[in-house]
Length: 428
Image 1 (cartoon, rainbow, N blue to C red):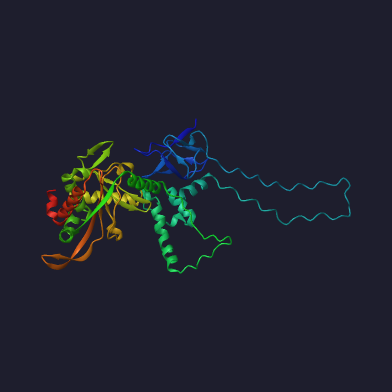
Image 2 (cartoon, one colour; image 1 turned 90 degrees about the horizontal axis):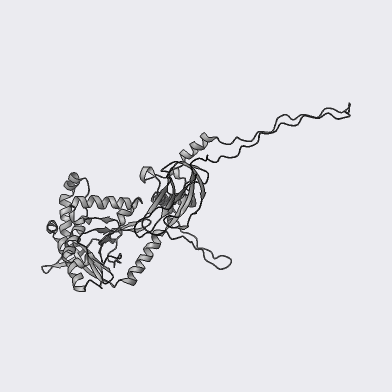
C-alpha cells in the first residue's frame, strides 16, 4: 500500500514553506532516510526524507509551490519496482525471398546486400543505471538548480556541507572567479530591443528573503523605533587580545575575538536595565530573567540570527566557541530551527563589512538591538591632548514604547564602560 510523504511540522510559528527541487523523479527507487526534496522556510531549509524504501510514486507538489505542514507531497510504494526503459524490439531478419509463381529463367538473381543494418544500441541495464546514480553528486536542491542555470558540472564543485554535500554557497564560490573575470571586462552598452524595452532579470525571492522583508516592515509598523549612539575606545581590548591571544588559543582551541567581550558587556548592561531584555504582550511588559543573545550573521541566503542561550553562564572561551560554531552553520546552511528560536536581545556587527555607522532594526518581539561597527583610528582628546585611538561607533535601537531615552542612553554608556575596562567584565 502506498505511503504518503507529507510536509513535516516545521517549527514554532512556521506555517508554510516553498518547495525546492525534487531530488528524485517519479518511478525512481528511494531508500529509507534518503532526502527526496528540500523545503525553504522563513528561517532554514528543511530536507524531507523517505520514511521507508520503495519507489517514488506520483508527485503532488512542484518546485515553487507553497505548502503547509501535513500537506501530501508524494507517495512511496514499497511493493513497486523502479521504472525501466521499455526494451527495444530486436531487429527483424530480412524476409526470405519468395519464389515467383512463374520464375523468369533468364533473369539474374537479385544482388544481396554486403552487410546487415547495424542493430540499435542496447538500453543500459540496472547495474549501469545504479552506477550512474551513484556517480550523481550529492547536492542540495538549490545548488542543483543554480548549477543547471549556469551550466556547471557539480562533480567539479567542492562540497562543504554535511557528508561533502554541495551547497548553494559552494556553487557561488565556484562562480566567483568567472564573475570577477567578467567584471574586469567592460561590457558593451545594452542595446534597446525592437519594442524599446531594456533588458531585465527577474529572480524569485526566497522564502527567507520574503520573511526578512515582512519582519522588517512589521517592526517599523508596530514598534516606536529610536536609535541612540555612542563611541567606544577599543585600546584596552585590543591590547588584551594582543597579549593573551596566543595563550588563549593554545588553552581553549579557539581564537579570542571581539564578540565575547561585547556579549559579556551586553549581558552586564541588561542586568542593570531589564526593560531592554523584555517584550510587550498585550498590555503587559514581560521582563526576561535569562539572557539568550542573538548574534546576527549575514549569510548568502539572507540575514539569520542564531541564539547563544544562557550567555550569562558562559565563559569567554565558551562564548567564542559557540559563536564560531553558529556562524559556520549559518555559512554552510545547516542551522536548525532550535538554533534560531527565541532570543531576548540581539547584537549585530556591521563592522565586518566595513560599516562605520548604521541604525539597526529591531527583531520583534525584542525591544533592543546593539550595533557594532568598524574599528577606525581617529583623533580624540584625552587630558586636553589630541591622541589617535582605535574607536568604534556603537548604536542602540530600542522600542520607545517601553524604553525611555534616558534608560537607553544609560544602557549604552554602561556597555561602553565595560568594553573600555575589560577586567570589569569578569564581575559583570
